[in-house]
Length: 160
Image (cartoon, rainbow, N blue to C red; front, side, top):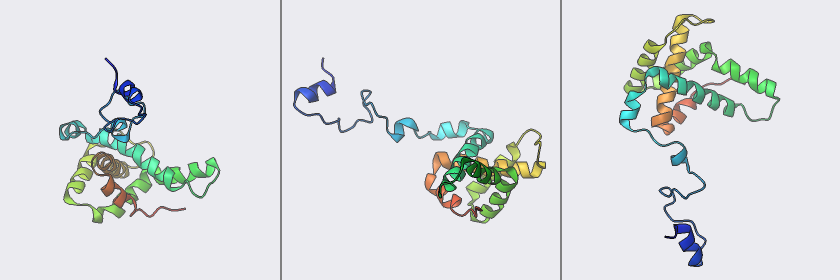
């Protein structure tokens, strides 16, 4: 039995199958294959701490991207990013965003605040809980509503 690619080659066509997202033969994965959408039941399995873990990475990546231009030395990038991803700054950003959050988002923030565990080494517990709340919200929105996440992140007043 010939594969789809072999059949196409013998038919004189070198085009890729129209629905390559289902094909196991596809050599270049698309975004849906790399980052498949989670089902509602999968989302419900994620703890606020897991969402904060993801949100921490997403937030740092957003901040890194924000400061990428104009080109600078790596040391300058690092200094700018570290200043923004500190718990104190994240707590300020949460306070800035709070008036723009809907009731579901505020509930996620509450769950994230209550899930903050451990003893922070450098900051007071309240600041740490607020930072974790922001990360929880960002992690959840990254998985469920990129447009809303983008809208909120654009409201942040980042310093140069």
